[in-house]
Image 1: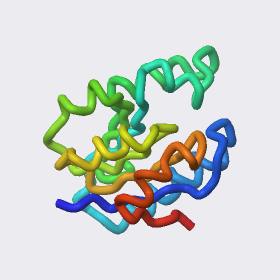
Image 2 (image 1 turned 180 degrees about the vertical axis):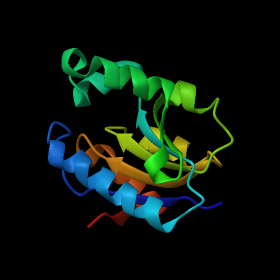
Image 3 (image 1 turned 120 degrees about the horizontal axis):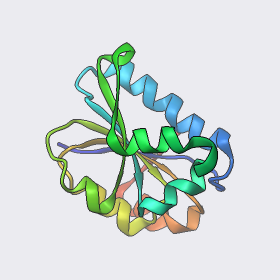
Image 4 (image 1 turned 30 degrees about the horizontal axis):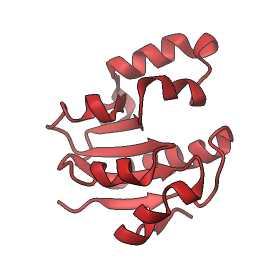
Length: 142
């Protein structure tokens, strides 16, 4: 299965609007593709989640993401967080992966997984994903 790849053409992961844009697009994919079983927030390392979500204010939410949360309103799709190390253990889903601040080498690895149907890259800096964009002809998320 070929992975459909997108990226947000903006920088600065501390801008909540950027990852909300990625999530809104994810929900539109979910609505149109009934084969999706899971939405994965993908981080290079477990500690990186704290860049996106304040640990003190969102501890329960963060813990739930690592365990996986099922959303019955969206066809029982599971929302979860994974890292490069933990994602490789999962191999039975059709996933939308929202890559949170990952670099080109990590994004290239994601493409090797048969479970990744869509990848949406939310970059820390665009220069860190340029190689991936050029090599894989990735589409800009409008």
